[in-house]
Length: 92
Image (cartoon, rainbow, N blue to C red; front, side):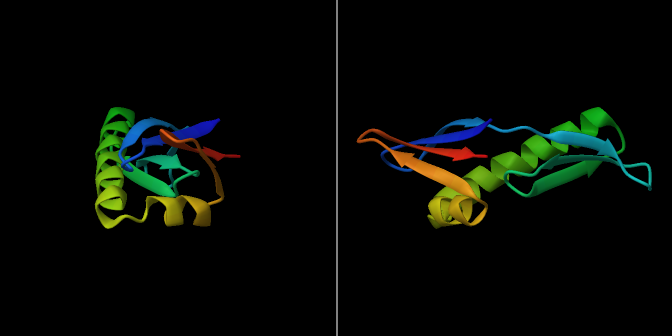
């Protein structure tokens, strides 16, 4: 199950998502996370995973800086569950 948690300031404190790794027709490895519609690629599995982790880091920084995390996750089908201290999103 995909889970993303933020603190009361909107900082991402936990992110657990599944990533698929496939070899495409051109021989490139593609790392893809359907829950975030985020992908990256590389010549090897390790390169694809490394590139994906870099893309994920940029994604997290960007949505927090822009203040668009909530809007984006809801548009991608995530469900929001709030408490006074945290907000947790689940993707089904």
